[in-house]
Image (tube, rainbow, N blue to C red):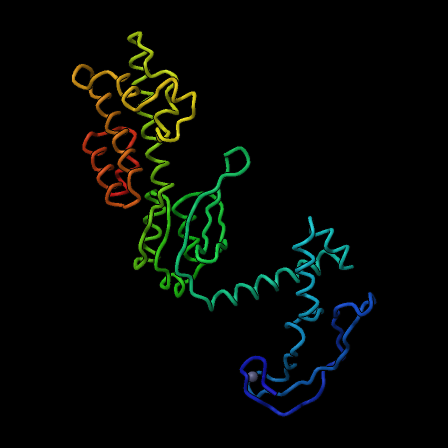
Amino acid sequence: MPCPECAVPYALYDHGPERLWRHLDTMQFETVLKARVPRINCQQHGVKTVEVPWAGKNSRFTLMFEAFAIRVLEASATVKAAALLLRLDWHSLHQIMERAVKRGLDRRAMETVRRIGIDEKSFGHGQSYVTLMSDLEVGRVLEVVPERTKEACQELWQRLGQQQCRSVEAVAIDMWEPFLSATEAAASQAQIVHDKFHVSKHLNEAVDQVRRGENRQLSSEGQDSLTGTKYLWLRNPENWNQNQKNSSPTYATLDSRLPKPGKSRNCSASSGAAWTGRKLWRSSSAGTAGRVAVGSLRSKGLPGCSRLTSTIY
Ligand SMILES: [Zn+2]
């Protein structure tokens, strides 16, 4: 029998005191396994109880019972409800949960993760954030840490472990410098991918920022041509609803509401650039078109696009 510490095999030394393990119920009666487990006398580690195949180390429950308890927990609204169904005290159930998490993590340490997504999520009233790391291939959350900071992102990578960091081939991530630098430091071999959603989110913000600025300017001059056009700018003209189509049937109409670049100040020219950028980005899912679009925005010095342009290039 192998020593539980060093796996060197030894002959039987004696049997430990009697132990009990709760097993799955038999015909709704609580069922308990009872055994005196063999011990060996290891030269290096002394007298040790050998591992039993039906239970984890130091557990008072069989592995089959623990697996069942986890299923009950998953189906229950609260830990208390599960404990009641299983006729367990809260502490024992908590220990079963901890052992299950450890088994899961040990298993996961053997796997390789190739495609990772890192994203932020807000909860409560948008005041609190967490940062999540997911395995995109199987659609599973790997880790969650509080806050959305560079440190949070670094912690995610640390928890993944060095070996798994090296196995990552691609990371889908928001275009945000703290996330990017933490990711580049932890998995330098991985390709960084910005998905279309993230890019268009920043582009939308930039377009809206420009529209608001210009609207303020025009309003102060008594013009209201941009008032109420927020969603027209943010939407693909092909997706305008009937009302929007009636009020602004074509892009040309919307465009004509803008003061002409030559006549007015720079800001209207930049709004045109934002629009062009959006059209370009939409017209192709290829990164090249997006880069051209962003390049054109940057060359115009669009104020709202700094976050976008500084991270794409
Ligand atoms: Zn040993």
